[in-house]
Image (cartoon, rainbow, N blue to C red; front, side, top):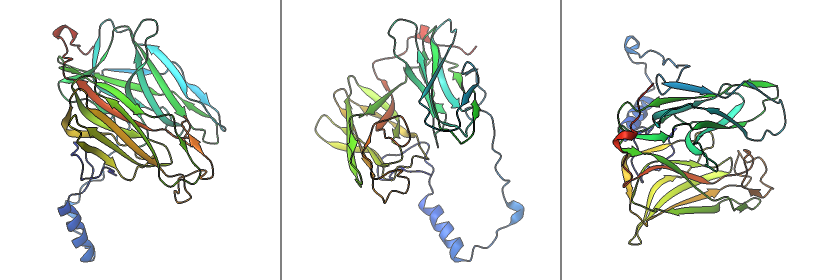
Length: 325
């Protein structure tokens, strides 16, 4: 399914029917749904069990197979492995893959470069409905030499003891990238959703510190997520909706990749506005009588508007180009 409001923005990975296709289906239904020429029917789709990003250049696994308890609450688990990269490497694509999909709710993969106090930096993630990360040609994500890979994995018990050994695959840039892609989460963790609230609003924003170009959006909430909107507040005061998701679905967490990258001048503001439905009318709501705050578990809530972007004035130098090993 595709959840973006078609009035705002055009996206390279849209999954929706055109007006002509909808009219064709309606006409076929009105005609009694007659069968066509079965000799020309397409073959059933073949679903691959491998990597959706193609053949990876390298695959990392969490250090060892772990056991997940059968019941109760499992806090986020963190794992790390060394890359042993001797030079900076540039990612063209990345895909996180659960070892056991029945027990893995989501995975976020980071890198952390060597040095005291270095913070983990987002690389890729997988969640219900998510796709592999594939960067546009001429762009890449830098992983510094000597970095380690870190997994954050959210496990949900199934009622029986489970095993998992999740992994992540990388495809490296074959030619020098021109821009270094970064990810930023525009988040607000300081909220309290009252019991039975039908449309509780939570907002967050950032101001562009330099001229930037946005490539994609990834809104994230949990079971009470109702709708999510990204706005661009221009320097002249104009407010432009750049993505609207009027019916957010926790089971289909889409990345919205812009067909044409969006220029964001220095000093402009990106604002995210989310609404949460904590009422009895929300069939996914586990407990409408409870107040809800930020939390890691599915029955708690989050409000994050991720963006993939690059800074216009940060051009990759020739010596920083990576090669596939």
